[in-house]
Length: 314
Length: 82
Image (cartoon, rainbow over the protein chains, first blue to last red):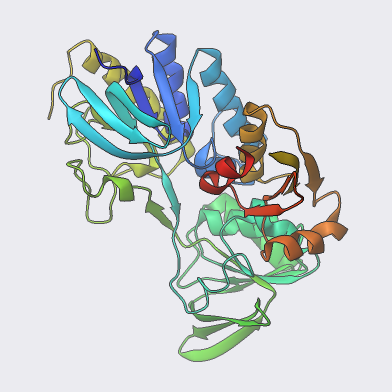
């Protein structure tokens, strides 16, 4: 018998999908360990306010929702390890995982590593990271009290975070490459800040370069309707879409789609038998917290069936 | 050996919670500087880290040498407080 720590299920990630799955598996007495390399709660935990998760008529801040999900999973016996899974070996009945806490084994695995904010790739973006370029408004917004900033993006995240940043910044230039694609409710809320002069929307505006001086951002150069424009700002917050956290899966036999999201069958099982995926990391995911939680519940039930021998490999 | 730890945080920062959670699980104590409550100390955080971000964790060793960890970076935080 191997002396490698062994669990029924190891979940990679501890965002809404994995935490929900863990609530279900632990309530079934399935021994469950979660690995989280970043924030418990995932991107939800660094989102200012969540208005579309059911059960919270006045909305809930992301950090609180994440903490409540964690407490609920831990209440039934889920264990969250702060660390990273670097490799998975399919050894038949068990999968062996290489982790920052040493090797571990599990009968089933749930990949729920979620996604992270995409970069624009504009010159200056990498150079001025954390010195004027940011991807987390709830973390770094406080540094822009009484300053001018730009927010790049036109989706739900960009609008939500731009509104959050108005509590610090004197003015925000919202640079949107095409048109605003945020929900109607968010657009209506955004309009209030536009009317009050706090936010100015620049549609059809492509960011060309983030320009710095003395190690800090001072300006964003862009193109609007074919004309060069500049925005004098102290900082830039970027929310231009999501990229899957699947780099560690690339050399494995878990099939990914062309962007890098994990492909699954109708049981949420990947191409590696006994390895499931749920939430933002899954190809076809809708990138919503409510659907991540729903997929987590489904994955947990399918994992239970797999452990009982009912779900076969695709 | 760690002499003391200071963490610069803000109210809404999820990564700050993770640093505190990690240190708490290790049985460690720290001084927290909340930049929402003490905005005048932002310059101090910037000077230490060179970055406009939190968390910034300053680990002072017994010989008074300091290690500054920007963000929630377990690969650096874990050995710094070991």
